[in-house]
Image (cartoon, rainbow, N blue to C red; front, side, top):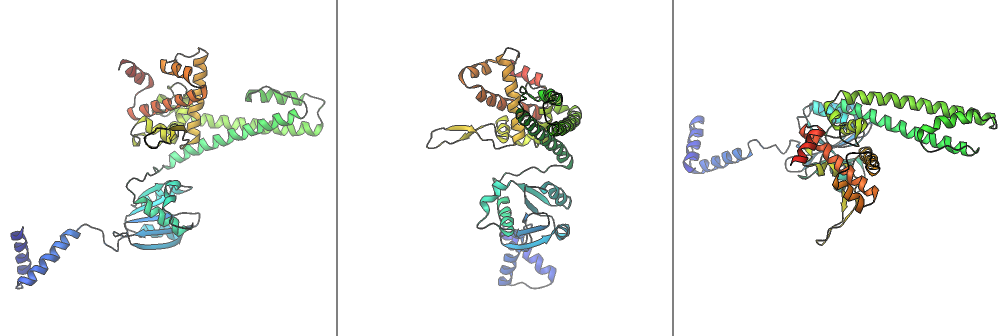
Length: 387
């Protein structure tokens, strides 16, 4: 190594036509060594990552350099923020996963930056003191640097359009349920009752319209309720048709629909709301992401498991539990061929609701297997039986 360094120094001296004594050679050797070590490392003036707190019109930035020193603290307007990142060299930016964050992630990625979305509950522990935009931006910048931090995958515009369809359908169904309950409640005040079920509402409205004992004002108001109910039903039908169109156009969605208890609607929701399924190491991790695994309260070597975490997407979890409950009812009445020994044994030992959640967990694991392997349900079922 000494010979190579001496050769380098002699070459430097001859290139610059200077005579190099021992002390100069030593200093040049040190400088060359430091230059080699620092080659490729970011400068202390270079921003290596930025945390950005977003809102509708004000954006707070916090950036640090290679030695973790804050060198950027700025509050920018919407337009100024876009111009700033257009001119900034590519860096890593952390955003809170909230309203509009996926739009900003797509835009900033188009400028060459690497964008990481962090769930609010994971960034909150890094807020040192107080709650303001600057503290939130600093917390995002710090949270992003943690090696074990989990990030939210960025959604495309098409994925968000599909999720908009799902959200709109959920809202309309909720409105229809509220309206149906209101109609039942008002009708009961006049002594008119109907059996359970959404399918009974139309018959109830017909009975109300044909009842001559009701005041004219009540008749008019019930007619308005009936008109609103039919409009909601029509809108939900339109959205269901759009959802089925998306389902039929996707091969993976059609394979997921073969799983008992899932169906076309559940398959479409699974596909729309799930990020890349390969990011989960196993089906259990996928079920835990949905919130279908028990809470862990273990301590001192004692394993204590509680109720399910409910930590994931509420709609996705609800669809799987409702599907599992329906399948369970068919099994208990002998109308299903999916009565496995595992399921029948669980029914003998546990309450039906607990069994439904356990079955929903199993459906989630099967769905993950189909999404990652590309197999059909029948094929996967056959392999499980032969193994």
